Image (cartoon, rainbow, N blue to C red; front, side):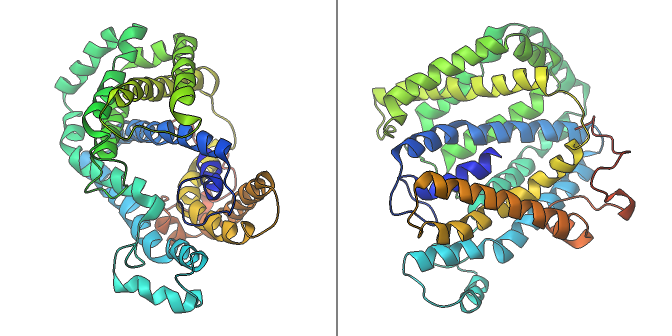
Length: 376
């Protein structure tokens, strides 16, 4: 939900995106740059937790085979069949192309990477990174099947009974700011994106490792208010000094060190808040959980293409930004819900292309009464 709201706001902020509104909102720019700090670290951490849960039920080889199908297949499908629409609308709005989409589409198969060509993974960079992280960490995933790994988790089970210890991993991310942030700014391009790459794989690994450390989760729940106050204080300091207006560090100086300390603390504490409050108030099964959980991946794959397509027309309307933003959000949610329910969920081939498990027809009802969602 936050991702759709985030990308729906992108046409109205002061930094670049696929399609842009003529007038920008400084308030939205500050909000978006703040959200951008923690939303992806949180997702990488959750993805690591998902790896740990998946390995409880299958071998490492079976796990990798599943990830190959669920990550690589949707990535290739999106790059050739859904993301090109984004490139088309971007170039039309910028006056770089004047033909129809039918005339534009064959350029994708020239296999020339964006921006010179039309082939790009765009927002699916997250899936690319997950796939690479999975390959790189496969030896550690295999090690998790042995007792030495579990003994390490038992050691930290004693350490993480204290909130100070639970906050300590923030120092790792602060170090990445000091070492990598300026020299390797965010690219989303995998090969020259070392700050994002190293910090993201760290979140991913921590999610995987800490899933089996019960004291970590209990401490997050028990001291959730403490972590919330830490997050709030660091977020307010960042907003005051860096986000309102958006003035991020550009050099290896004292501003960077202040920013790195505050942002490292902010990101890690908001992850701890999400765990603590989620464990306290969301740790229950309910009838629609399985349906919505399964819908997440197709929503992610399609959302930006729909937003770009809708925004291309909406930004031309003589309406206030808030009206345009709300219209894009509503149309995106409705469109995704209809596409998922009627064209993806019921059919086996679309399910595979959008990263879902193959299911028997007997299980394709809206809410399966026999579905065991507790494991989610």
